[in-house]
Length: 345
Image 1 (spheres, rainbow, N blue to C red):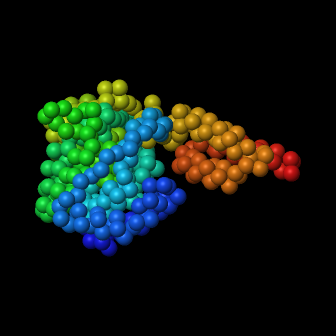
Image 2: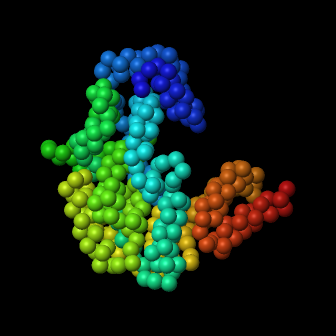
Image 3: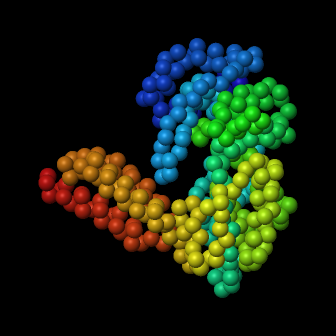
């Protein structure tokens, strides 16, 4: 994991698309020296994780991002390359966050298929328990995470590096007795999150014998034809999360709803025979497109290529839902601007 070759491969992967950034360019300017120094620290057990640069983004809700130094992110990449193949086989099929071949669209499709099976092709009643964990990344208990990692990793030197990465951050959920939090923005944090929540996934699938369950990071759903079973399961879920992972459900984001009412999951709304984009998602998409068109001033010869790329991305996202009208709205907006541009020329 810590050979110079592994560190160089991690660097090559990390630098893709980032070569114009100042901190990346500075690291590359003295690449050999930086890689040698990093290798020496890691091999001699002297590695210490550096500080974070923090900032906020709207995604769409406000998120506090913590960005590590280039040096530390190279370490994250080399650690990820080794850890992921170890833990990936232990994950359940219906865990959809930050895994190759998974993602939000696959997660929503899984919910649609589960709902169709449980409702016997929408002819019987179907209920969905939907939950969200409060301040998930900030609430991850670092000692519990390290104990989970210790179960599968025997090398104390690797554990020492993982401990340096994990304990380099502390959220405001920490106290004198518990050090909590992993930073949003780290590549390795996504893997740590899946490793942590895999404990819950295994509990749901094996201890609770739940057949229809899907999770994306801290959002998860359970589908059943019996509402009372979901009520009983919710009590067990709360108990396990509190006792075993020191997590709690967000009180405003827990619901048991009938499929006919629509199930809001990962930006889509699942209904019988129909999959729609969430209303907020549609409004945000159109608003962003209007802003982009205005900023780039396509009619005056702006960056039409960039708008084309954004529109293609939007249409690709929309194509997963039954949203013919929204697709037409997006196409019409761009076509109208393109027509004005041609007339001016």
